[in-house]
Amino acid sequence: MKTLISNSKKVLIPLIMGSVFAGNVMAAGPYAVELGEAGTFTILSKSGITDVYPSAVTGNVGTSPITGAALLLNCDEVSGAVYTVDSAGPLPCSINSPYILGLAVSDMGIAYNDAAGRVPADHTELGAGEIGGLTLKPGVYKWSSDVNISTDVTFNGTMDDVWIMQISGNLNQENAKRVTLTGGALAKNIFWQVAGYTALGTYASFEGIVLSKTLISVNTGTTVNGRLLAQTAVTLQKNTINAPTEQYIEDAPQ
Image (cartoon, rainbow, N blue to C red; front, side, top):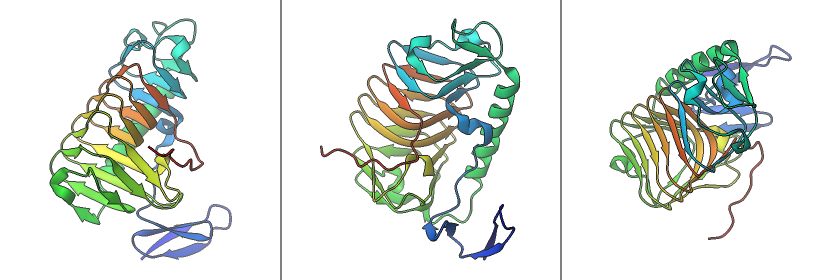
């Protein structure tokens, strides 16, 4: 049994383990990972962002503590603010704000540890690390291996449901494969905690918040609806990266 404190009325509301009260709905799965200031960024990296032009990023991007010279997106590729720790970032759009970036990077680490520490896992070693072809219900998923998306994978749930994917190895998505949301599920409620690297194949479609201990590599033509929060580098190649929406949008028929 857990309790949730309402900020407005300071009322203790009993919660059933594995469920979260959201409005008048008992949401399934764990409670969402709090991203703090990191949640204001679509891409955040500690050691640089490389890019094969043109990419299109909706939302804020930033690098810290590395110099802004390691942020290689052009101003016309970002619909949002570009934050750097010095004046070496892309001109004329970069904002020199080491304070904001320091908070965001700190919160990114806190969020990573939060996601990694959630217990108990509802599902352990599912598919021996192969989740392609599966439909995943809300919950905490844990693997001691790599996780592969070799065919399309579906997340099914409501707009209030949450998924946390704890991956001790790497996350690999094959070329042209899709992460699909159904039933109202939202990308902002899917958290991929990856201890290794994350590699998204060419012309793929990906959903969710990536909290990666190392590299996040997005290959040619891939679209991401979510956030890329990397404790090393992020590499882009003619990608579309959108901050997650608050509203469910049904996937078009394939």
